[in-house]
Each structure stands twice: as C-alpha cells, then as structure tokens.
Length: 359
Ligand code: SAH
Figure 1 (cartoon, helix red, strand yellow):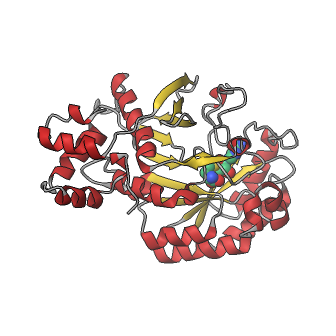
Figure 2 (cartoon, helix red, strand yellow; figure 1 turned 90 degrees about the vertical axis):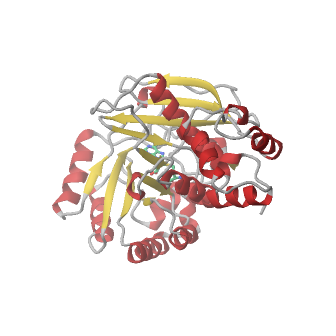
Figure 3 (cartoon, protein in one colour; figure 1 turned 45 degrees about the vertical axis):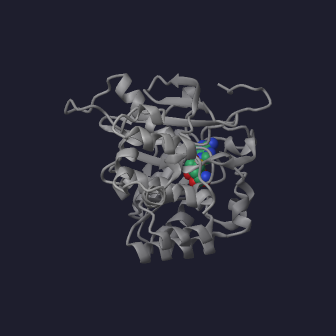
C-alpha cells in the first residue's frame, strides 16, 4: 500500500492493521475515528481518550490534514458556499443546501476537472489533482461544525447534522473512485456518519468502465448520470467524454448497473435553449427512458462562460416537461439554489489567473 499520510483517508481495516503492527489494540481504531469524524478534533494531542504513548505514535506516522477556509458566502436562499485552500495551496468549493430537515452537501472530489464539458465552469480550471478521501471527508466534517456553531436545529429540536451527500461539486467523482469509495464507506459507517446508501449520490459525466467498477466494489451510494443530450452528435459537442463512450455504451453500463444492483439510475438532463430543450429532444428522451427503470432530473442551465449556450424560457421548459410527463416518465426539475453566490450546478470554480474567487 502506498503510504497514506492523512489519517482520515485510511479505511477502518487499514487503521486496525497499522495499530496491530505497532503493538496496539485494534479497538482503538473506533475511538480514533470517532474523534476524527464526530468530534471537533484538529490534532492528535486533542484526542483525550487516547493514551499519550499512542498519540505520539500517531503523530509520528500520520497527519490530520486540514482545509483552510478562504471564503464563505451565504445565499439569500440559505445556501452556503465555502472556498477552501488545500495544504498545497490549491482551491476547492463546497456547498451546503438546506431544505427543511434535509442538509445536503455538494462536495468536490477533484481540484479542477478534466472532462471539459462546454457548459461547466469547473472545466475552465483544467485538472489539477485528485482530492484525497480525508480532504473530501473534511469538507463534510466542516459543515457539521458550521451547523453546530450556528446552533442549527432539525424540526424535532435536535442538533442539525449533514443528512445527504451529493458528489456533484468540482471534478469527476468516478475518475477518483478509489478515494470516493473510501469516503462513502466512512460516511456509511453506523458509528460515524451513519448515512444510508440512498443518502449519497455520485454523479458522473459517463465514465463507462468506472460505472462497472462501482458495482463491483459495491460502493454504498446511488448513481446519477449526466446524460444532458439525447443524441451522440449533440452530446459530443458539449461533453467530450461522449467521443470515448457514446450514449449506447453509456446506457449499456447503466442497464447493467440497474440489473446488478436493483437500483434506479437518475439521468440528469441540463436544459439548454435550442439544444436539449426541444420537442425533438423530449421525444428522444422518452425513447431512452420508457424501456428503463430510471428517473430524470432536469436542470435548467445556469450561467456559465460559454455565450453560445443559453437557458430556455419558462414556457419552453414547461413544454418540455409536459411532453415527457405525458409519456409517464418520472421527471423532476432541480430547484436552482445559490445562484446569487455562484453555488449552483456547474458554477463552482476558482479563477487562478485572477488569484481570487470569481464571485
Ligand atoms: N462531473 C460530474 C459531477 C459534477 S457536475 C458530472 O458530470 O456529473 C454536476 C451536475 O451539474 C451534472 O449533472 C452537470 O451536467 C450539471 N451542470 C454542469 N454545468 C451546469 C450548468 N452550467 N448549468 C446546469 N447544470 C450544470
């Protein structure tokens, strides 16, 4: 195993094995992980329940990497966006989307992105590096700290905690599957975050072999696929990944996913004026969805940097939804959140040339 330095990145088993190697009891793994993920512990010294000798061994072998808050923005609709600086001086963004009793966190999985989708701002950053599991988990831990600090409560009066994770921030999660898998397993752990499979959604631009790997690994999560277009020519024009794995190959992979896991796939569908929001596209979408157990989540295009792409009018959107609904396809429309702070889908980016966040 490659040496892992951030202790949060380790799986339970890896930590237990390390403890055995250094002559410690494996049950300490639970205590350590509880302090890391459920407490506000930022150093090994602060782990009071751990004997001093073990704390020393831990600090000699691992670090607790930390994200540094560079900016926090609050939207009119309650959405919160953080800009974090990583230990090596890069930047990522995390978004908290509160809706009644649901506290969803949209996490980044990579610094930048290599997929180069025409409508997405992250693409303009290029790809810098994968985030480690520990860094992704830190995005979530910090939201829990924020909820605690602000005294946010669930409707039953209990302290609010993150309830849902969407892997839809910066990056292509399936291009960082090893780390994302680790994150999901830690989030799923009953004694830690205790998040059920249905509360975590990985969204992919369509990295076909990795969809198969996700099933093989039995990663506890749901799958959303950014279909965004119904024919290859149009999809390739806005999503270069389609030139490698076209729609037929993508559907073959999602069909296999459904067959092997018994779960639905959600197709995300960005509505772009004259491109994907047309009567013809609605009919093609029906042809794709009618024979499948799936759901469609339509997303109205948020402002990006490409002036040739426009959001459709409310009438065009309604017309599109009406056609799809008539065919009894389950379709929902994503309520745009945090647009005023550039926290909505496809708006997360860090403009390195200007040296500051765009907003
Ligand atoms: N790389 C992954 C996850 C990040 S994008 C993926 O492609 O799925 C998360 C979602 O936001 C995707 O469905 C994507 O198609 C959508 N999206 C990207 N840019 C957008 C924009 N400008 N407006 C609306 N949705 C956008």
